[in-house]
Length: 327
Length: 306
Ligand SMILES: Nc1ncnc2c1ncn2[C@@H]1O[C@H](COP(=O)(O)OP(=O)(O)OP(=O)(O)O)[C@@H](O)[C@H]1O
Ligand code: SF4
Ligand SMILES: [Mg+2]
Picture (cartoon, rainbow over the protein chains, first blue to last red):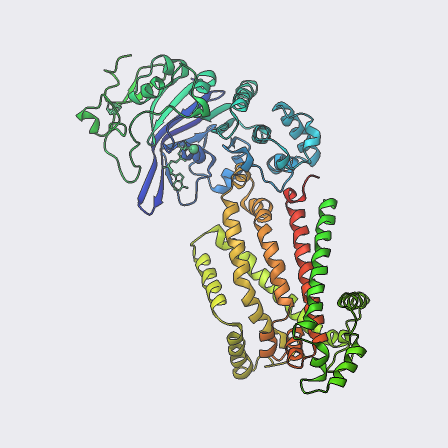
């Protein structure tokens, strides 16, 4: 049994809105082993960012969160106060965001932003923290790192800033790194470099990596396992090899079939479009959320709960007809 | 940074020159100043004598250079009404206005900024609503009315504070309250909206993701960015408070610059009016320049390449 870095069961996140309760995450299970890269894919608005943010404990105050289990490196996070969670952030788990241009504070130097976390967590002196910052900047491929510490973010390109954000996330030597669409805001040529860097760092440092991306090419290249999310639930989960070779959920099949050349996505790394619309997330939902768009939907798909089918080797499909769906 | 400051100072100098030319021109907007001094019913010979005595017969540019030259050496001319140097009259009055203005400004900042921050931390919370009530009423209630009410209630009914004048420090209490209450809503509003914007940014999220405690996230990351618009507004507000509120000074019978300007205008004492306008305009230039420099200190992007 491999050691678990993250073990979440039945995570629900709801947000009160003017139109009623928006049930954005509706019972998600997510396991990541130590040193594993899990890619989370799914259409815009299906709840990927909320899931990731809940791991950081950074959901908005008004969000309602429940789960049956929420463990990170063996610690139960669900019972921890925000002050306790703050001690884990940046140290056990770190996160990088979509838009590196806005994720760095324009009024503080790079050095200050890199070191402030570890100086607090690990009580490092300024020179120790600076030394680590230089080491990390060097690692992520920033040339002449020592001189960069006194510079402000506006002197750096988008790609460089994302490298700096990665360095910043690694400063506390976290076991789990969450990257929420880390390349969407970047130039296409830079995207590949950043993702390659992430993959290398993950392998070198033995990180567990939760990577949210729309780019199925990237998924094929660096994921150990893939979770496909749809309307607040995990529709299918499998190893990357298995998922690309033998997708079982009609939604996953639709996604993969929409890719023009296997392993290559279109420019802008948009997730391939499949016909139909995502159901509204306000209020409760009966049966399979995908059935309006599913070509093989039948009357039994309207029943609750939708069965979770396992084919072994960690391949799970949430679909009544998963057993019948041909490979 | 140095090049930014020198550029900014150059701009300030140009504005000063324009402002001085405008206040110099004031002397002539109401027509021939010699006739104004001689009085509407005065004889033509008197006006002519005055014209020569005051040098109004010389070319305008010469008069301007002469005026600005002596202004630079601290000579702002003679008051026509009192026949003493303008600087002396202003010197007697400026203390009251500066005291009132600065104290009101500090009181307003000390109340408005924390309240704005607290309101932004929980939008629509009870504190936010309370702050909104203060802001709306502060903007809706005219200062003179509030001032008069304060005098009636605290001065006349309770007798806690003097009802007029500034002979003792207690005399400043009510004017400071009324004046800062006038300044608070705008300062609070801009702090709140700036803070709400900044709290929603990715770098604040990133700061929290590093595990910084909330008070550091607010003070180090959020506030520093949120105060940028506040600094510019505060400079203008301080300028307004220091320009002496004619209304407040009249209501509380304080002998400040605002009241002096008003009285001098009624007395056609143009050199005094001119000097006050010049001083206050220059004050604005100094304050906005300082605000820009302070902003550049806070935000490296404003400094250009350094
Ligand atoms: N703070 C919020 N207030 C209200 N609704 C929210 C908030 N955050 C997310 N939502 C809603 O919750 C749903 C899930 O959002 P989430 O950001 O997790 O989607 P996502 O899968 O990350 O999408 P994307 O690919 O566009 O980033 C969306 O419908 C979104 O509109
Ligand atoms: S449960 Fe029914 S509707 Fe849902 S994916 Fe399976 S077949 Fe389609
Ligand atoms: Mg997202």
